[in-house]
Length: 308
Ligand SMILES: N[C@@H](CCC(=O)N[C@@H](CS)C(=O)NCC(=O)O)C(=O)O
Image (cartoon, rainbow, N blue to C red; front, side, top):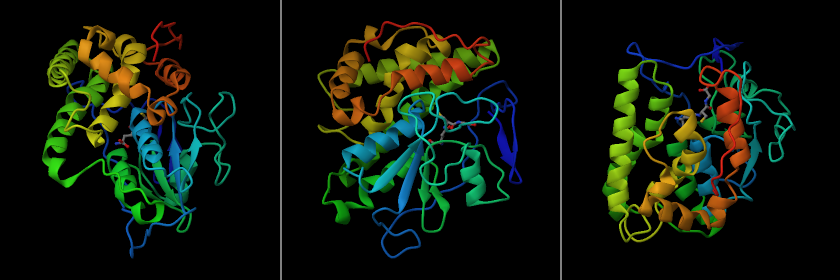
């Protein structure tokens, strides 16, 4: 893992942990927006996404980029799934990883250094990069997907709205529940450093999964009757659950395939091009099992029989 302090890279385990042995996510630093007549105006060939296929937060941005037909507008570089002492890096060991298409950097931290040579930060994906000012516009996935949802509409002829005004309060409420208990809940369980915090995280996670299971009875979407941002944020976690979180993060009360509605929901959505073709289980499994040596010291990747 590692992090940047005053622009210099320090390697090592910086798995951020609260004083009670609970897992705490460090706040990220770039939160600008793309909008007409602002510094970051919507333009073709200007913005670039740095992602990992392993990362559920980056996965959201890839899904939204496809759903909004932004592939010709937003180019992409994909890091290697193996994240060790130098953090995310670019190499060609895995198919579907790429070089850094913009600068041919070896490590992702160099991109953060380019944005700010004195930066102190963890080095995370996704990153939305601006070629014009050579800086990071935004590195918070929940915001990047909202940018993609609307900022380029007039250029791409795609008004599909995944965060419609009339459903916003419902979407916000379910996003909160799912982020705290499920999306980030699996990390809270996996990175817990004592039994009590693990128990709390795992119980919250499975209570929340039961609520969502009930909510999905007879339904194929979390909110309303078409796909919204809530589904886009939820699916990347479901996709990783049985192959990784169930085993590696000890979220092992039940698998997703054991839930009637959650598994149907996952299978239905997985048939969509935007979901299927942004999912790479080899990168997912290789990253978590190989990179988190504090949880899996020998980096052995378990064989799994799951279809998705
Ligand atoms: N809040 C960020 C979280 C991104 C994040 O934590 N990404 C992970 C990969 S799944 C990462 O890059 N971790 C590297 C590190 O923390 O050093 C978002 O949602 O965009």
